[in-house]
Length: 361
Image (cartoon, rainbow, N blue to C red):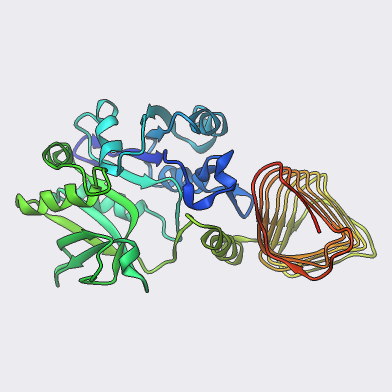
């Protein structure tokens, strides 16, 4: 998208330590945790590419950066080119923009948090920003708990008049959803602010500085869903929402005559379903084995996983999990190569397990 000949670049923030999603993020980047069997970051990159934003800088942390680089590669799978930018410490969103300045230079850009999911395509917002003169544009969504987010106050014209980060007494319920549009004046604003009480350079402070110096900051309230995937329950809710809105029936695996497939179920090639019932929406990756089991709604089964003599629903299994002899596993997030099996105990389980964990009950 262009205004004149100015291309809008993309800046995707994929650093941070993901402390709210531990134990999963002890060994994995939060942006690579799957929703509907696709890493969250991939949804972000696809959204940008669909909007014509193809020159994308990705901010990574030293700890998880190599895994993210391996997963994304050169970006060609998404129709983008990637520039990798290391943020040596989690010092705030505005600090991430600061370290990305050599890549951004004097281009307008869209900044997108790599662990957020929105139901909206950003295409129209990129186009609007490319065609307007505002110093910034932010996307907003009403929330029930505004004290947990950056909050904006918006006037009748749709312009932002005030921003505040996680206020004790929220002046509105309009939360920043993690998609921002900036012109190069944001760099001057970031240079003018100081770290907050938590020691970070806050992007809300930088945007407020734009307002204080007379710049226009537009706001758009998105009607579609927005999901912060920072915690286990948030991620399960995201998995539910994405499956509900995108899952389609596609049975490419091997399903025997004793099995029953109901609703929207996506089974990848190489997977075997034997004497089992699958009730969608469910997505099952490649080379899985499901025997004598029930897989219920809003479940994602990662590649190479095995489920035997078990019942699971509303659960995310990452790749190569092994579930056996479990009466009921629900509302759970199981990391890569996680193993859950029964040896006597019965009843429902609700678990959050990191990679390579094993639970015997």
